[in-house]
Image (cartoon, rainbow over all chains, first blue to last red; front, top):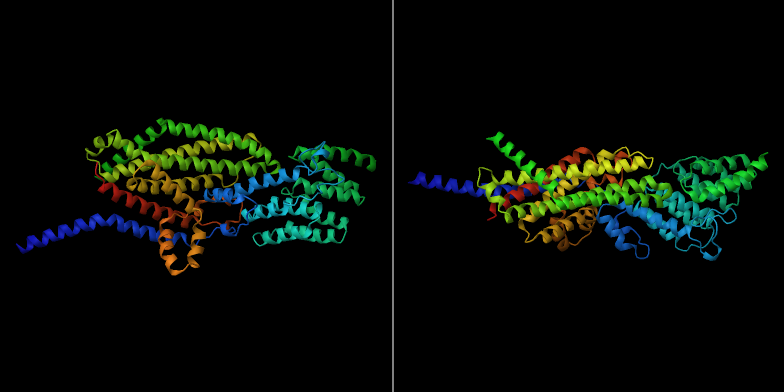
Length: 250
Length: 258
């Protein structure tokens, strides 16, 4: 009688245990998963520290929540290029529309949002070297805001401390402040040979070399732009300049 | 007995795989992915010097999103469809354990999503080659991690679908988990600086929400390897988290009355 009671109680106990085994196992597994994953932190600026540009917050949250941080930065970079590529004086727009590559002004203007847009891109993806080189180059050498360019580079350098191109940029900005275009060109020459170098910076260095009377070096860079540039906006100018330089070299 | 369970699992998985491929929604997704990948070319052209980068990231992001949509929709509807069409009675009236039915369905779904993602990956790589580029060094690894991410979210979607009241609510709940899963490091930061009362609410969230940043190699494939999580961490995390979801789903399915 007593043993029957014990067997029934044991069976009941086993049934209860079997019923609660899966949820208990699930809880244990969740805790183990938590322990495995907690040590990893993504190597980016936390979402809360990204400074929005105008109404960018909504699109930023959307992209970040989909796990597409890089793509968000790229789309904002395309927008930056379109912003900088659109003339501030539309009535003056003529040949080469869409890109600033005229030798006389090469990208000068006010472009008041340029710095904020660039900072936003680099907040999203501080490893986007091309965007940093493009933005800092335009700010320092075309738009006359070297301090903002330095600020951008300093922010990004914390993430990529070994990036020599940023050091070269900082040195070149220093010389450009001291009104020494020859030294700026010298320092930026290795940067120009790097595949990450924006064509806008290549054009700038070519122009500085030409102004410093170093026609052979300038011609070499223009030839590189003409043959390898993916941006068709810069090619006619490079061809034109190359023809002029050929006459000077001959 | 064990061999029979495995053969049942395989049969059920194959059945779900066939069903998924026949499903019009699934085919629509693939067509949509093809069209969108093609439109990535336009975006790539706008990026001028960064065409490869944009084309790669856009394509990889899209493949993952399509995989996610397919897996969430599949998990939310397959059991429901079987209940509505009464197929579930045919299956469960045979000597098929409920957990085998559930696991077979999940395996079939994950295989079909994996195949779909592989097809899209091929299409994407083809487009890259067509534009004169080659896919990045870790392309297969990125794609595999994206698939693991969809597996994880699929297990979660299955659990959610078993207690939610409709397809829509389970899709929405899983979508919320997906979103939160990309902000887990921010949630941890909040927890460290939160008041004790708030941490009571936030702590369970930290356990329940999957850490999807672990799988997000597509956001950092060109970084130094030291900045990426190791394979061991990713494998263990996937095993434990999806295991927890599957156990919870088995428990819920066992209690379900048809």
